[in-house]
Image 1 (tube, rainbow, N blue to C red):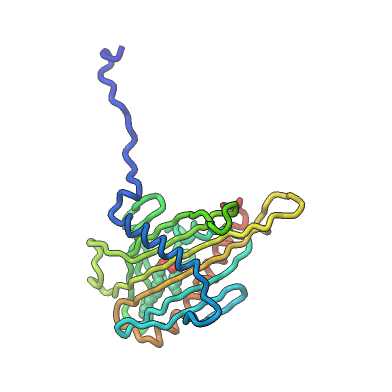
Image 2 (cartoon, rainbow, N blue to C red; image 1 turned 90 degrees about the vertical axis):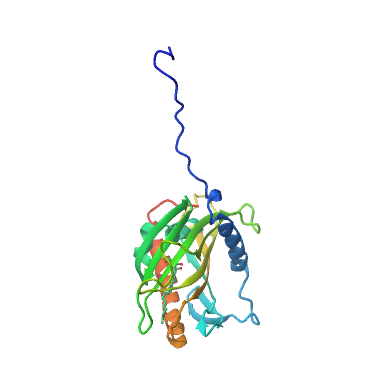
Length: 258
Ligand code: 6CM
């Protein structure tokens, strides 16, 4: 039978390269582990140098004033607790490019340069110019993952997205009108579930998400310190409030995603 119809050619699906084969993978692994460990550390009562600069309801934002070669690189750490959403949902809307223009108000243009793996993307973004500084752009990988909660093995997983600057030979820094910025960002989300006493199914009323957002941005070139600090003071609270409100609004009529 077979000989009559010719040789049997096995049909194998095209290989999907796992992230672990990618040139950036060792750096992604190392950075994600480091960033999550750092995000888990509290800001401490005092003495660690974190100063509270914005507060609104459950949201607290802290910064440490730091400069490198005269440029402001103040590390930022924010914590927020938002009712009715899960960590997986928060990370889903933060990671996926199709939602970014909806919530990222400083964004001018976003391009996905490469899909590294299902949960890792390479982005090029240009941000709106802030007077009197030059416009900024940034190339970064972004990676989303879930991690078991070692404090609560039976509880929901921790979800995280880490963004970290990298190089891309086709988009060299400072080649056009933009100054390249360098960032490391970690969004870490822990879901709390408070099940109904009567054994009723878990609804959005029974969940809340503790969000920790850490960021260090090097502006990459001249930017007046006072303007930069004023921009951060205004933009970070605006971002976290707007983004979490966006996630609440997007998910309110959808089933919970753990
Ligand atoms: O983490 C955030 N967004 C992510 C997705 O876009 C990603 C990108 C962060 C870019 C942060 C750059 C913001 C600052 C750009 C202006 C620099 C101006 C310099 C000159 C000023 C005098 O991680 C949310 C980022 C929220 C930022 C407020």
